[in-house]
Image (cartoon, rainbow, N blue to C red; front, side, top):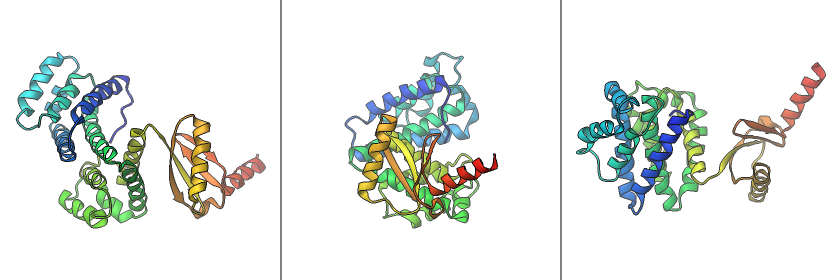
Length: 276
């Protein structure tokens, strides 16, 4: 799961997402699930077939020729909702062929999050993804297995199903299964954190990762969220983690910025001052 930082790929992603939202308009949950599955399938195909991947992302060729190639190869394999999304993606100008693959995966994930959003379950999916990331990240052997690109995919599915099936939203399960099938060299816990942040951005919110020595009550959480919203001038989603090493106070990370109000942080700062 890569981050699309080049301007060309960001523009391509925006155009493709607009087509995706049109494709999901009026769709039933099963249709959106099918759309996501088909987009994941195309992304996996392009991930395996380097020649086809390069041909469909070749910015030096005419967009119509790339569209014709995609239609010729995929029209019989894709439904009426997925095909226009893939066509828009291959017509767009991506910075690299790999960005095209990442963009299609991103659209599949977004489709599932749209499904959760329309069902009023986006909050639950976001929270489950975050918590699963923490659980898997804390178990070295489990993370190694699920992140291993050479491990049997069906075996990894069985592990995931045993861990979460019946305990999480169907959208969460679908996202996790796809992630372990295509980890792209990243730790699964990192991928789950990115998915949680994508879910938060779906609601136009930033994510604040908050570490505290003891659990925060509901009123404390609301007060903290309001304070951070005033600081950053935008809604903030809280992801809470209990960490006894914090010692007291809070350690808050929003993007690359850290607000360290913990006892540990103040002691570390004092030690640095004394060492100067």
